[in-house]
Image 1 (cartoon, rainbow, N blue to C red):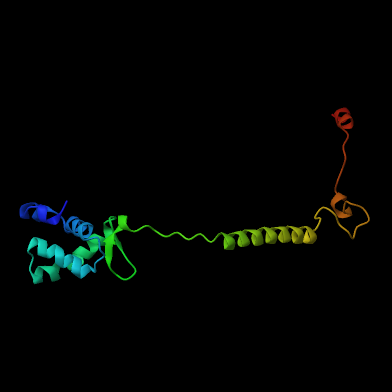
Image 2 (image 1 turned 45 degrees about the vertical axis):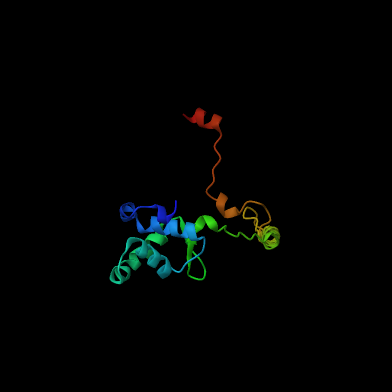
Length: 148
């Protein structure tokens, strides 16, 4: 669809972002926001005062419309004309994974070396501390039944 093929009445019913989409699609070039909105205003026969009053709203429309993309130089273009460049640096990731695994192994070894046996008292001659058994009484089940 070309801008010249659209009637004035139909243009007046269209949103600014739809008109901007047609303009960018026709011209196949990126544009600064003021140039793009000026072309939209020209298509709608809007005057300079209307341009100044509505350019902020136009900017908001473009930022929320997923069809448009703002480029690094501040110009706008159709998102479909730009492919995202994804750079994957596997070497750095592999090194960090290997380093992380080595760190985990070293921590495990350190934990084993520093781990105390909490169930064994090295100072005592036997495995059970004496003070815990002072109040301990063993009752045979048969003796208890005989006393009952």
